[in-house]
Length: 527
Image (tube, rainbow, N blue to C red):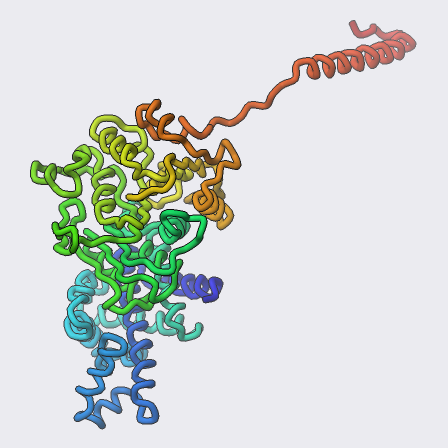
């Protein structure tokens, strides 16, 4: 897919959003905009599949439905088998757009019915409540039905016009959706942390976990059994992992998200990037409380195991662990993370579901590397068990939600190397207007250093033995192992004195010459 084209489409749609939302909060308008893009994707995909299914009999689907009432059930059965969903002709984007273009009074009612149909009948069961946060009766759209209908006509018409300037390509629409999520995140400040991991960081984690876990130097795995992101936000990390390996390369994708709006974004995002509903499971619930039944299996033979675990959980999240959680199978061998910071609770949750041949990469604040108390005990056990493979320090101000520098911790259950690789990437970035940016060459260097466990620059990376780490009381602060101080220039005092003597001699000669002229002019000489 042409990256330039994707950005152009994304920028066009973002311009439409900026123009139409008026005084509406950007987060509220986001849900309308992205829902309509989702409907457009579903419709394009469905109509393309219907054209193949009906062959020479294909015509406008509303016309075909009217003329072939007895064949509808069989047709829809075939469509469910091939594209995994059905959309009635009235709810297809082509009809919705026509209602908007002609300013029909029926648009709002049709959209309401259409969203309800997609949630409850289009798919088997996985998309119930998909549009629960999209309130078409909201006063934010207008004071009454007529005003809301008029506003929706404008939004749909403008989106339709914007999309008509670009090729009808499902990959393009999926990438534009991702671009818009990023743009809305940029405008959401701290709230963006709830649903978006910047693509540059997402790429680092995805490239790490898709490399062979035992010997990354051999390159990417061809297949991953399962992939898990237990704080998946809008799903960009999971999609990025799949993008690294390509379609049909992952057994099943699992995601969990606590925020209902973001949970819906993630489900739409999966479909928009070409995944069938049978290829992923996204669950709405709290990971720390482990509310997902599929993750509660106690039988080791049936336990979910994932070849890749990725996560960007909320940093230093305050939680309220109870006595029951102390005996939880995820935490009982390590202890509970403190109330003030659930960072290690998130880490241990994901680590529990990592397979013996898998790799986990998680983004956390630097505090987890050196804080004492309960966190020190957890960190020490992970180190003694040989589970911490690599620590990567990133630059400050990469996220929309915080300006603090963060780190990536790479974990494995069966680690080959008996040391920890430290990578100090904090000084390598491009300064941006609002956020700092990791360029492709910065990302490539991180991955190359991790993949080949390089130590070619003492200020950038170093492999540290467990003996040295133990001498430092299992403190993993990067500056203890990789120099982060700016090197001072070595001064050659003899050379400095020589230069000063030359300067002094030059001054003396110049002064003598100058005084000669002053004397001839009868003026007082310089002292």
